[in-house]
Image (cartoon, rainbow over all chains, first blue to last red; front, side, top):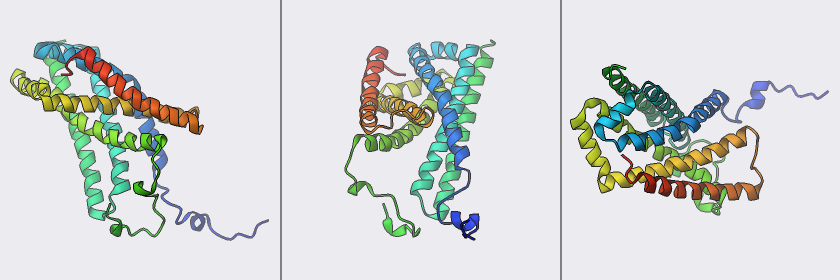
Length: 130
Length: 133
């Protein structure tokens, strides 16, 4: 028997963070798995839709499957972006107020862009009367 | 980097300037760099999506900007950045899941492949699409 009376807390102290890194890592990977399928689809759609001008692009977006996949792609991308940029801010910004400010800004930008783009897709889909 | 602001007494990971550059390191750094690039590119794509909902006038303005020289260069960089992050991201998943490709030679070759893939695939898509947006 070893006679180590150190508490688990004392043994772990100073070895780094033990917060929610695992959950963050898994969320990053799960959104990446979704994007592996959604990004090629989106690139193909973007190229074909954008070459068809305003009418062609809106017609593309008004298709139910395109609208659904586009909202999923935007959701997965903005979620993945938010997680990735969060790590970059946490790694490189040490100044307390600046760090939290940028983390909040990152969340606001990603959530805001998702709301704006998802609403745009819905507007086009609904106004097409599909 | 402002090293003087670093107040944590624990050792920092080595700085870029005292590392010998190698392919796996370059791929790791560019994964992060292209992540930021994709973030900025997503702003462009968002503008495109929102302008489509805003109507033909707004869309026309966005289309003119995207088709300008600056817009095309930005879109090409975004495409290259996206494709690198995509290829290297798949490698990250194969590292995490089946734990494949950790052998140093394989890892280096795979890094070179990811860079080559991004450039070749971006050029191919670009030439096929003639104009993105």
